[in-house]
Picture 1: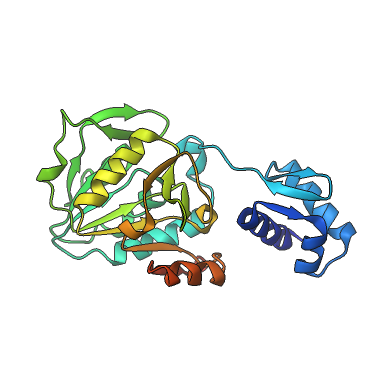
Picture 2: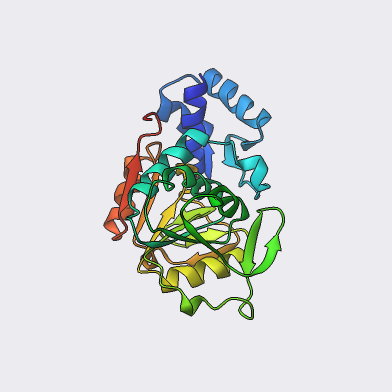
Length: 253
């Protein structure tokens, strides 16, 4: 039942508004079963019901500490895949999200690596390693434990970033990469513009979702790394628009 409820949530998330009768056909179950599943998802505040149907509740951004342990298996798998793209001697950017934060254990064996970051947890994790760490200058954003850039304190044009690993709160073909914070979005946009290669590292729940502020159109990034819960139709949709998606198996170590 729990697995079906997650599938229902994914379906509603994709379509935003869905009639109950559509769900019975899609999942080949009775109306009574769908009503029970919907009731549970309503209690979990994932969806809300209206006459004859349901609609997805768009989440608001939570504190980083609250999000750190959600979908942790998927985030670690995505982070490991990101780290595998990093070569010795490179200069990379690690964003301030909970997915990119999981990259740090997989980087410590790299040689002559430089990490530029706006994430205080990432910087603290790498203290004591052989990795050179550059923390961008600016204002500390307490909820995210991040630094949002101040152009008077930090000059991005001096950086030579080989690969950037960017987080996102929303990913769609139509609206691109989006985030809840204007300041975070500005920092990410600057990093993407100066990086040789820019990847978005995000779990599958962020797809086909648009939040407050656009970071950039999807054409501005070089690839997306996500988990295998993403529907094949979505992967194909992005591929048709020239955006490669690397899917990782969250069940593998």
